[in-house]
Length: 450
Image 1 (cartoon, rainbow, N blue to C red):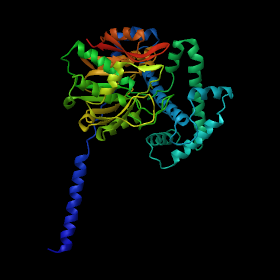
Image 2: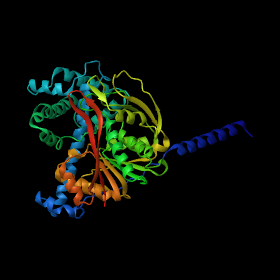
Image 3: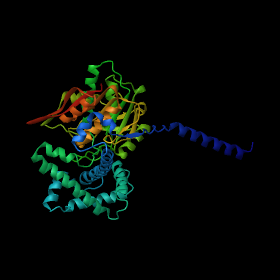
Image 4: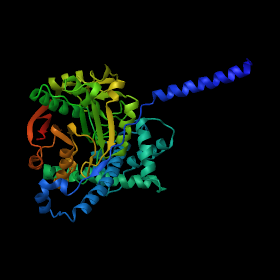
């Protein structure tokens, strides 16, 4: 055989084999679930409540359309809130000293609602970093956000100055005005603000406690399909930004780990869907399915002489991640924080799907779920929006299915009773004791569908 012909055929064969191997490594994307818009008929048990608030069958479609449009605005503002908090606090793109947002809000008001010079300097540094080729995960996220949010605005510094002013007005009202008026005033602020993607490791502890109650009430229960509403993404919280790892959505992994460790589920027949109104969160979770993450877990709270972790929380953090991957200690210079790294196994990652969903206006048209989890999202809804969200949640639960949340608003109990989703149990978990103040704690509420 002609040696040239042999090598040409050999090279073609090698390329074909490489292509086949590459294809075999691609995990097929999860099928896209359809979202069904909520209807007046879905809300039959709550018609009287809605009519008392001026909503009728005739006005309902326009009401839902208005809520959906406003929620898109709130998603955009929530993302930009995180961008401002990142601009103030991050140490990754500038050597300037971080600025605590509440103190910045106070300085902003003292300056007659003008952007302080130290903030302007940080914003300019951030814009230079966003124009660079840096692959820092948060800079990548915010670079994409800036392009989509301000694609038709030439003066990005002026645009960010306007966002800074909007965010600082909210922070000032929350910290220095509403706080003095009582908790109801703070609650009202959150029902109009941007939709935050904030999440933290501590939220997993709350859900773990709730799932422990589920196991104790029904030791033989098997959970195969799970929906997590608003899993979020740890980008840049309002205070205490910690940049020890890339942005991550902790709750899906914490829920999978808890279900398996408690014996409620098996990896081999478990499906967990993270449904978030923010499409960037959905994209992040979908990538995690094919590229299992290495989770840099860090407690949002630091232990000090005045703040001491509870033994139960320490035990929870110690075992967290063992059922979904390989755990090892993390190395960082943050005194007082609990930390570890969890390398998620491929089989655990394949249990996770993700779908876009506005839980107030729509539900997923999929097989029913055995468990639905919604923590730290219900406070963003007013009572009418809460009624719609709970109707969608009840509609996606299987008979006997369990709903876990941490919203203590009394009206939620009235709504869930009307929907056939009565309260069954609650459990408070102490995260840490605080010298001279109430303990840091959270309460999980459990409902079961009739």
